[in-house]
Amino acid sequence: MSEPSAPISELAWRELLFQHTEGLPAAFAAGQVTGYCGFDPTASSLHVGNLVPVMGLVHLQRAGHRPIALVGGGTGMIGDPSGRSSERTLQTLETIAENAEAIRQQLAKFLDFEGPNAAKLVNNADWLTKLSLLDFLRDTGKHFSINYMLAKDSVKSRLETGLSFTEFSYMLLQAHDFLELHQREGVTLQIGGSDQWGNITAGLELIRRTTNGDANALTFPLITNADGSKFGKSTGGGSVWLDPARTSPYKFYQFWIGADDRDVSRYLRFFTLLDRDTIEALDQSVRTTPEQRAAQRALATDVTTRVHGADAARVAQEVSALLFEKADPQGLSDAALEALRLEIPFATYSAPADGGPADGGPADGPALSEGIDVYECLTALGVAASRGAAKRLLEQGGVSINGTKLSAADRLIGEDRLLRGRHLLLKKGAREFGLVQVP
RNA sequence: GGUGAGGUACUCAAGUGGCCAACGAGAACAGACUGUAAAUCUGUCGGCGCAAGCCUUCGAAGGUUCGAAUCCUUCCCUCACCA
Image: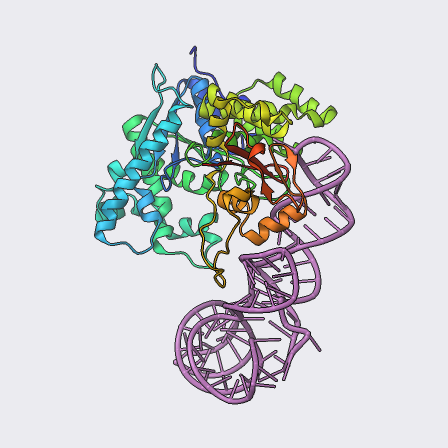
C-alpha cells in the first residue's frame, strides 16, 4: 500500500457518500486516518444489510488508512431491555463474546489484519462494563445538555411514541466509545449508516470538549429496494446472513442473482470492488441486454466469492445452472448430488405409519410398495405447508420431479423414476427445490 | 382511576342467530407470458380426504338456543379522550 489517499472520490462515484464533516477531506489529505465503525453483536452473524459499512471499512483500508471494527458487546447489553436475571446477564455476556468472535471471523474476510495499516477488532464491553455510572455521568454526561440531545432526530422522532431513559442515553455511550477509541487508538473518524449521524456527531462533540481534539464523521446512504421492499430479505422473508450455516452460499448467490434491474447498478457499486469502467459497462448491459442479466451474475459472483470463497461460489453457480438453466438432472454426478443436498431442502422419505384414520390427525398414506407419495415428499421438505397445499400444487401443475412436470394423476412415483435409484429432485414453481432420499 | 370505541384468517376489513370455513382488498403461492425480471391475465389461498364429507377456527372461558363470529355473563387485551 503506497501513500494513503482520499477515499472520498471513490466513495462518491459509488454513491456511498451520504454526509460527511467539512474537515474530512483535509484529514485524509494530511495522512493516514484511523476510522471505526460499530457493529451490533445481537446475532452470531452479520447480514447483507451490514455490508455497506463493512465495505466502507474496506474502502478505507484500500486507500491506505487504518480501519477498526467495533463490536458493541457493551452497548448490546443495554440495547435489549427485556427482563433478565443476573444469571442471564452472564449468559448474555458469553453469547455476546461468541457473537463477537463469529463477527470477527466474518470481518476478517473483508479486512486485512496485517501490515502497516492492519485492521483491528475491538469490543466496547472491554471498557463499558468497567465504567461506573457516577464516572459516566460526571465525565460524559456533563458535556451534553438535554436540549442538545432532544434536538437529535433519533430522539425527536421518538418523543411522541415514547423512549426509555436507556435508549435516550445510547448516544452518550456511543459518544463515549468514540472518545475512548480516539484516546486509545488515535481514531479520528467514525463511519456508519445515515441514521447514525446524530450519534456520531455527539461523539465529535465529546471529543472536542474533552480533549480539544478534532475528529470527523462519514455516513452512508440507506439502502433501498426499487420495489419498496426492505433490503436484505430473501424471497422467503428471512434475513440473508453471511454465515453459511444460516444462509447457504447457494441461497446467498441466489439473493444477488435476483436483484432487480433497477437496483443492480447501485448494488454493484455498493457491494463489489469492481472498477468504474467494468461497472459502467455492466450498467450498459442492463439497458441493452437485460435478459442476459450480466450485471446480476457479476454481482452475485463477486459478493459470493468474497464472503464464501471461490469454491463455494463456483458450486453455487453450478447448482444454479442445474436448477434454473435446464441442465438435465439425470446427468447428475454423485458429487453434485452431495453438494445439492447441502444447498436445498433435503429430507429422507418415510412411508406414513400404519394406523386407523384419525380425525384431524395425519391420515394414512400409501405404502412404499405402491409408489412414492409426492404429498409426503413436499410436506417433509417443508415445500408445502400441508397435504392439502401439496395437493393443490400438484393440481395446478406447480410441481415437477427430475425436471418433468407432474399432473394431478402423478401423486405416486414409481421407483424406476428415482435418480441413481434413491433420489428425487422436486421443484415447486420456478425456483423452489427439494431433494428427497428414499431409504 | 373515569368515559367511550374495539378485538374476525398473514395484513386491512365485511359480516349483528341458520344461505359462514366466513364478502372484499392487499400480501403470498401456482399456471400462462417472460429474463430465475417487471407488468398483465387465470387459479389457489384453515386441516384431513380421490370424493361425499368430517374436524378445528372469528380475543379467552362459560351460558342461552335445534342452531352462535353473531345473543348473555365473566375475564384478558388494544385504542381514543379525560384525570
